[in-house]
Length: 156
Length: 156
Image (cartoon, rainbow over all chains, first blue to last red; front, side, top):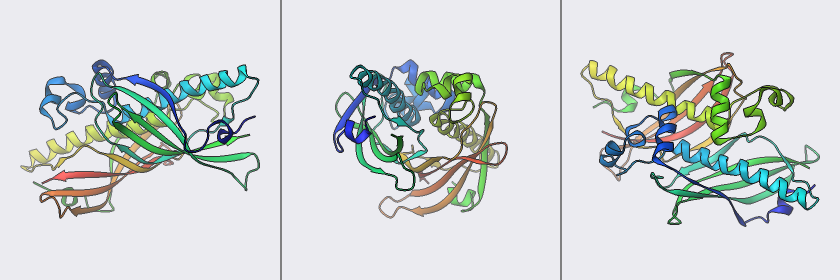
């Protein structure tokens, strides 16, 4: 079984996928979880400080997860085809310093990425490793829109 | 216009609402954003380390926002009825140290709360205030399931 560190060199950014935020998707998410005028209505959004309909930050955040789950399933298949095993990852327990850096407007396509920042074996738990990853998203103008740091446990 | 600090004494926890996570809600959110087996399928979840169908952490997080938006609209009406004005809040730019402390299982009801931790005037921007708030959620057994810290700008 490969470790994350063997698969992904620390400091190298890996694109995990893209997501286009349609007005319909933005409004549907906002109705459920963040019903503020600038996430719900084109006209009201235009008059708001954002100047246009934009996604809830929670929607932008969940978009990272959506891309990661798909990416990781693909990686497991890719490695299996080479006769290798992807490490098993534990569920995330949270994250640090999440920043919504710019609004995500209707029609924007966000490209998400992950970078392994640090990896170490857990002395207290043989076979467990603790990874720090940087999670990012940028829009089609290559402007960063979201970043946060997460810890991922892996079992080898 | 009242400031947040005048309305909510620092250190006092205010309940902002409750949300019941049905299996249907959990699965629908997971299909869109976090399609992992323990968020999608009762049977597979039972065999997972969670032992039962549970919500994506991003779903639990967005639930805080859902309750806060409704709470804040209610506060604005309550204050208006007393002839007072709620402060205008800026959009959040992110948050710190989010922790998913326990799984949220199908059928759980999460009660969300907010506590003003610190409030200060921004010397550089007259009329602007920067608040640090602690955001929490606990299940029907009063077990904490989520917590994070956020910064909220207000304009007075």
